[in-house]
Length: 250
Image (cartoon, rainbow, N blue to C red; front, side, top):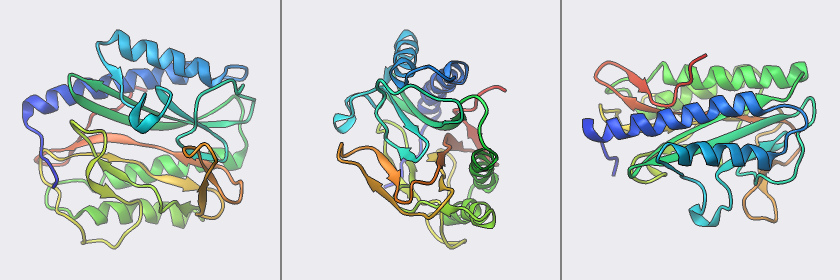
């Protein structure tokens, strides 16, 4: 069942989203050659807790860290640790914060120093696909119309949509209904209604679409070793469109 949030619930989710957005601002400043992914996790954890919130991911189904830090061919669910970021890497950082019982969730992929033209294009296409999908969000639109809008941008750029992992509803639970694939047939799926809160998150591979999970049972990587990117915002459907709850100020 898809749960529509009340205005009081949305107020709490706005605050959760703001905390996530500001944590991403800290990540943007901290990502550089020579920093470890463990240090990024420490910075994020400390900030989230300083805001009277708790990291959504730490302990979730046994996940050991406060952020997901996935580098280069790692798509999602990478563990922060001693890995030192190198010039030219890209890193996808997924952040969740729970504030007074409600979650915000957002991911972004950052370049580490100067990155290749292919990597830069991957980031640009993945981000563009997210905003193309968001532009379609309004009441009575069917969900897979949004999915199709994301898919179209990715595939027209010659890149691949990951199909094993999808976006989701979010609220009291980190993952709620509906599931939101990044591909689909338009004019199908549930109709969007005001009060729905959705985490929309295209995941894109520069090479083939296929991924596999490493022996840690968490880290997902591309089968062909190609670069991949992950962008995500939590949004609330409004009477005339949507409100971005995890928007960062540029």
